[in-house]
Amino acid sequence: MIKISFLRFKTRPVKVKNLVIGGDNPVVVQTMCTEYTENVPAVVEQIIALHQAGAELIRITVPSLKDAEHVAEIKKLLKKKYQDVPLVADVHHFGSDIAIKTAEVMDKIRINPGLFVFKKPSGKLEYSKTEIEAELAEIEKALLPVLATCKKHGTAMRIGVNHGSLSERLKIMYGDTPQGMVESAMEYLKICQRNHFQELVISLKASKVKVMIEANRLMVQRMVEEGMNYPLHLGVTEAGAGQMGRVKGVVGIGTLLAEGIGDTIRVSLSEDPINELSVCYDLLQSLGLRRTKLELIGCPTCGRTRFDLPPMLAKVETEFGHLSNLSIAVMGCIVNGPGEMADADYGMMGQEEKTVTIFRGQTLIKPNVPQDQALTVLKELIQADGKWIETNKE
Image (tube, rainbow, N blue to C red; front, side, top):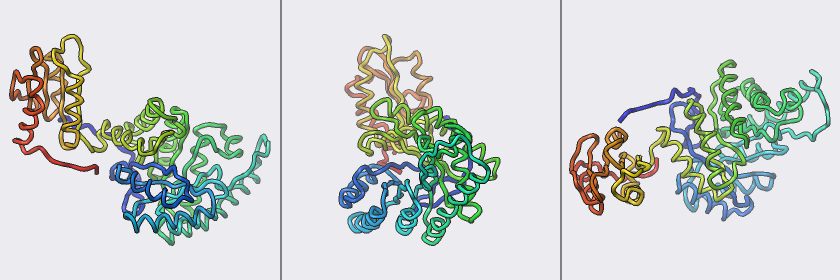
């Protein structure tokens, strides 16, 4: 099989409990709870279901100090009923007190620079140097005790910029632009670095795919200029649901991953968050970044195809889908079949009416197999080769 790899932007590894984001580690898949934080038992049950479905890092909203107490209860009950799972506290408005409280018990906290030191719009048209310096000093004052708590408890932090919640000051200085998003993150990163805290992950999210892509590209450029290399969390926020929500997430995240940018991802959907996980893993597998199930190659078919290929493809996925160590091709005919399935470990190709030929790699193993016997013949071949290996998600 041809091996293709992307030159990845080398980031510093950041530990979040037993996970490591960045460095040479696999791209981490994450999602977010949708249950009310105060409903502790429901949140715990959702975390268990999400973790068992493949979520490696799970975020919980913490909009109040009371909810900061609830997340401590969630951690305790989760460990009692199931096991420790890496959890993130999502902190927004007036975040310092909430962030301090949650950093004592959570594995990672997320703060939103546009809301952390919240100010109502003033209607200003410009900011003086003195006013800018005063706001930055206020941010640093609010952030310092959070950093101290994170250091004490070994808690990581995500500086999570949202396009829709940039501060008034940054909008005036840079406009409602990707550059404004990057500068918002850089202000917080520089404060963290000055105060010797580097357990940081960055995100720059937008509902517009092109804005999200450009912001992350610019963020990498700025980090290189500043001698920084923090891991990046990728996502298109408010992407919606259904096919369009999935397409937006995959295009935005996938474009950047293909450029070597990104260390952890979430495909945000307005659905049950468990639905996000298969999209994440399929996206990573399509780029060769992780392998969690069978790699299936399928011909789109045309008038040359003389066997029932779509149902056969579905049967192969059902019967062999758990074999993450293998790739199998199902091809319609000899025109493109041999070339297109050359990278597959095994394959079948349409031959005469309702028959197929079975291959191991590019080697023909058995011709003229009736289509209703093809799965059995293929399975016996894989088993005889010692390649029938039961595997689980990484």
